Image 1: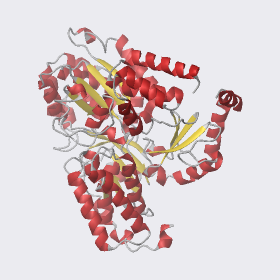
Image 2: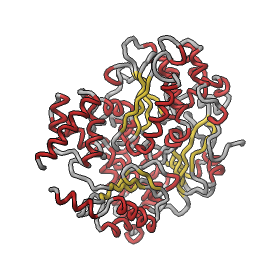
Image 3: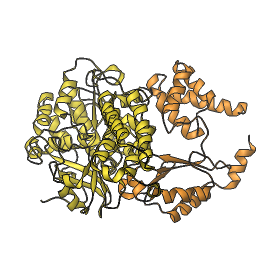
Length: 397
Length: 172
């Protein structure tokens, strides 16, 4: 497979603003048509078709409308958005502007996680430059009635705000507690208005698709998962970093590219993702198989998988917003269970009860965080039972 | 708090509210700027913000207590946030944590008695390919080793000399 190594090549051969210039010559429905034809799906992890999302927002009759860039990249093991915002932010701003044109929104908001505040000054400077080049502001590139501007708002250290409705709550000056969906943000979003919330990478790719066409994008990847994906690779590999690879690549192929052969497991999708054991490395990284926002954490032969589960559960105990009981209490109970396993004091019957609790959390959690917080634990106890049961206390120290 | 300090804080809050707008969606930016300048959000600050935005003070309190970077208790001049999430954990964050405790003489969640350093845990900082990572205020440090901890802290100490600390403490 002709897979590019470290470094992002996709954006290098696309001229900045060529996507926006192409979009300006198209009607709204044609822009949305190009995005829909490309098969682009949300790169934050949920995989919702971007064209459909834009179309719903465009069809909404309420005004004003908003385009929100979700730059609250908090999923453990994910850092591709940081790289995009550091080296390729023009494409992100351009994608927001295109989304504004397509949906009829005049305001874009970047929700940048507080941990990335060091990126703020550079991003503000780029926005100022885009304003002075008439790429933002009134009558963009001379197109009458096409007004769009972007502001950056900061998060304050809450992982849950990466969930789109929690993000909107935070923008509105509230606690970052997810809302019930429906209504969806495309209908009732920021300030009750139609709002497109897209991941950083999704917006950058939308720019590329407008520049190079839907067919170019569709030719990469699989039928159901078209295009390129940025993978954030960390853990026990020789060459950690951001990799640009076609969707549909198998976990094993990816490990060869990054120097992670001999791994015993890979956590795909971060703390909220799944732990895939070596015997399943032939599985594909794609929406129809192992779906991911791009976080790949590799565990070498010597890693203690119970400690991995413990780290993830500590994360969720910390980051649960506390709104719904399955997530708030469930994660605590699972963590206590892991600590019992660590001491070698957990019966198989109780482990089964914990697994049942995890499944209940998947069903009963209010938001994506709550529903996915047991995933890592469940997949680790499923695949590494021999390793986690019957431990002696010495091993835990 | 001295009356003059309270007046300064009050004036600051008014100008922040004027700049960001006197509406609920201005709450986060206002609180973030108060946090940056005063290193905490006092009861008085919460009441003033609430008054200007015309919301109940408990609403402001509710937001302050939700977000990890907003604090009721005053933080040190330098806030060190060490990433505790899985990739940094595998890269040896425990060693760095021990060295931070040794160098500062305080545990995580605590501030040094001279008010210079606060030590905290952070969840994933997005530097998983270059761990262990930590933030010192807004600046990110990667591949932190126990020895590098010392150098980073020395760098902070040079910026903030004991003289300025005494001046500040003398003012209370």
